[in-house]
Amino acid sequence: MRSGDAAEDPAAGSSVGLTTATARMLLAPTDAGGALADQVARRLGRAIRLGLLIDGDRLPAEAQLAAQVGVSTVTLREALSTLREQGLVVTRRGRGGGTFVRAPADAREPLRQFGVHELQELGDQRAAIRGAAARLAAQRALDEEIERLEEQLERLEAASTASERRRADTQLTIAIAGAAQSSRLTREEARLRAEVGDLLGLELSEAEYAKIVRERRRLVEAIKRRRPDRARNLAEAQVAAETARLVALRFQLERPDVDGPKTQAGVEFSAHRPEVLAEVAAEVEGIFAELAGLAAAFDRLGGGEGGALAVDDLAELRPTIFSILDAGKGLVSGAGVVVAPGLLSDRDRWLEWWSLAAARTRPEPLRVNLDPDAPDFYDYTTADWFATPRTTLAPHLAGPFVDYDCTNTYALTLSTPILRDREFLGVAAADVLVASLERHIVPRLADLDRPVALTTAAGRVIASNDPELVAGQRLPTEGVAPPAKPADPVATLRLVEL
Image (cartoon, rainbow, N blue to C red; front, side, top):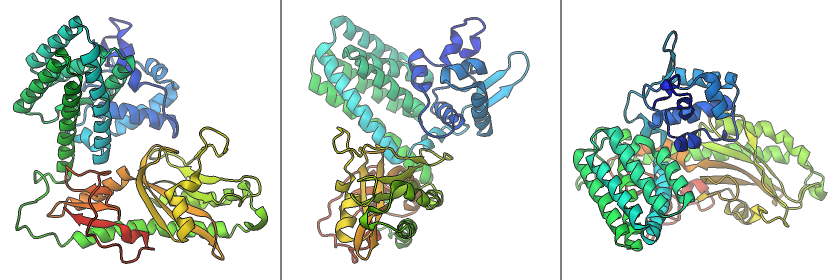
């Protein structure tokens, strides 16, 4: 039942056009950071783009929807105004009026909301959950539960419309997790399925759909035959194939005229290759220049010797830190100074660090536990971005790495030492999310005639124009000459022909 039928059924409006499980995922308490109206607009907008809220659905009355989201009616109206400006909802007056969902005109538009690395990370997580659920279902499912899986499989095979196919495949996927007898796996499978939305059915041919049905049948058969390892492998392979397809489609958005990078022999390598690397290097060098200014501002604070400098003194650095975030052009997600232990008079350790949680939000301070006796103590002195500049007294580019100690993001950290008479006082640093850097780089790489990858000196891929090589993968470095200037972190970036 659509939420527009709420007048006939008072309970209908509570779903916002979704099942209860999906609505709970979508309308969970708002994420921290940023204006509440921006948070609500982002969340509802993402749901519309992914097909979780369907074109033509009428949203519940403003008071009801505001209560579900957990914000005031005024905040919700501001969020809906943003969505109207984006063309994602339309408000009609009079009898039968209300606010209605309007899906993007471009069927591929929802895919643009994901970067290539984001799609890969989503695939990694889906494979882990799907594989574990399939393995446990093969071990734990009762015969009657397997019969229900076979019934779901028949519905999947008989489905004819896109919505029927999406619903049938979703029900089968979640039913397998349910057969694993794990409420946590089932909830996570439902949440991930809601996050991926309609993307799995994007531009899916009849032959491709028939293959999906065959693969699902093989999976159910493995569960029925009590073969847990085979069930897990099949489930993981299915997710890997879905992810590879989405990544390839995402690359085609950058190169709509071709099916993929030109790899045939005899194609002359693009003359723009050096220009691409130079452009990337210039952006990174610009961030390092800003950090040098921040380091100089720290030095001008005075103190440092004898512990005269205190935490409150570092507040003077905030305008400079905020200007780095503002000048980052969507690349820099966090910046600040991290002081050497024992430098401050009132704290042994300190990070004057500020982050941008999302676009158009105000900088927020990073909060970590700096108590050595605490179980979640953050010993930043062991981090590469701090330890290497302390040893070399030179700027450093660390990563990409998962920042599981602080922000749990996949990022590069640029850091430059703060020195006074060659004494190390700490670092001025900035985080650059790989997803943000990728959005800047991939369109440039897409113009090249051969598959290439931007990598670190260690061979870690930052971005590429090849759907089969995404950020985080590792390329061999045997036979690759070291950078000409090891002290120059920008020189460690390489554009490698694949």
